Amino acid sequence: MKKLFLLTILLSLTFIVKAQSFLSLDSCRALALANNKDLLISNEKINAAHYQHKAAFTNYLPSFSATGTYMRNQKEFSLLNNDQKAALSGLGTNLAGPLQQAAGIIAQLHPEIASQIPALGASLTSAFNEAGSSLVDALRTDTRNVYAGAITLTQPLYMGGKIRAYNKITKYAEELAQQQHQGGMQEVIMSTDQAYWQVISLVNKKKLAEGYLKLLQQLDSDVEKMIAEGVATKADGLSVRVKVNEAEMTLTKVEDGLSLARMLLCQLCGIDLSSPITLADENMEDIPLLTPETHFDMSTAYANRPEIRSLELATQIYKQKINVTRAEHLPSIALMGNYMVTNPSVFNSFENKFKGMWNVGVMVQIPIWHWGEGIYKTKAAKAEARIAQYQLQDAREKIELQVNQSAFKVKEASKKLVMATKNMEKADENLRYATLGFKEGVIATSNVLEAQTAWLSAQSEKIDAQIDVKLTEIYLKKSLGTLK
Image (tube, rainbow, N blue to C red):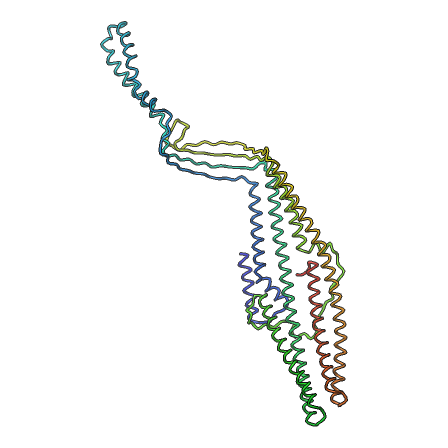
């Protein structure tokens, strides 16, 4: 459902872009966040970590499993050997001699029943033979076809703290995935802002190049008239035409750069590269600038930076890995219960019936001696935890340096903008005087060209300074973790 919702937003944004081809900075950010594949991957990593955390919690709960088997044996298991089977089957025959001796003694003691004794002996022999055969049949196991099944319940009681530690690890891993996703979003926003303001910069430079080309073309036209009147030389005309050609080449380069910058922005926003787009700030003559607050609290910056939180979570994960490693060499206790059925069953001699029984017990596993393996592994896990702690400290120091550098660059960019604005005012005034003097015939063509070149340079520096202020603001927000 969540994926469908995101897809709907993406399609809606894409439709709006194609229909209007007009993008603000916020809409560019929204499109970039919705289309970035790295963010989609990190979002799936969050889902995976969430389900891993849920799976880890199930280790607290009892588990049930069922097992079934069938086995065909070549031979049948026998409780009696062949001699014993033969002896039991011929039990009456084997007892014929002792029975005849007993019959002779009875006949001497009771002559009146002597005639009945032979029949009685034959009857007893037959009865004993049948009884022996029945006993042999009763002791037959019939184990050529064996069926067995079991349902087992296992409830962990004590696992050395492994289950608790693993749950904490998966919880931290889920939050770590979220922090990495947040960091990825900030990177995408920063890249989008850079591409956006790069387009704005080139749009303004294109206007500047077009204006400069018009000035030179007008100057070229005026010089041609002056050459025709004999006031200017052909050398002056050639100098102006060279500058016109240079201005045309510059305009071509700016147009090519602008096309590539628009393509980059379209690629970041997930728009077709050939789509004509117009940005909301293209027609602004002066880009509105907001001077950011350069006084900051480093503790707030540490709290806002996803990298710091990610390293803190990594440190916690490694600490829990110490517990997991230690738990592998501690006693473990589990409650177990089974219900088993077999065929043949042995609960009422051997029967070809499914019969079962249940049992309950406690299983204890105690590691006794592994030549110090547990100690070595625990020390290795502690070393990894210390590495994560050192990485966190190093990241704090680097972020503090990054924040101070970003704040310094903001101040530096603001100063450059003030200086560029003043230079532009002077260049405007210089160009105005040079143009008037050229029209009055008191200033040479070369001086006018120099004034126009200075004006172009001042205008370009002002545009660069404005964009630089915008970008340094973005970098400062990124270093403070407040870029949203």
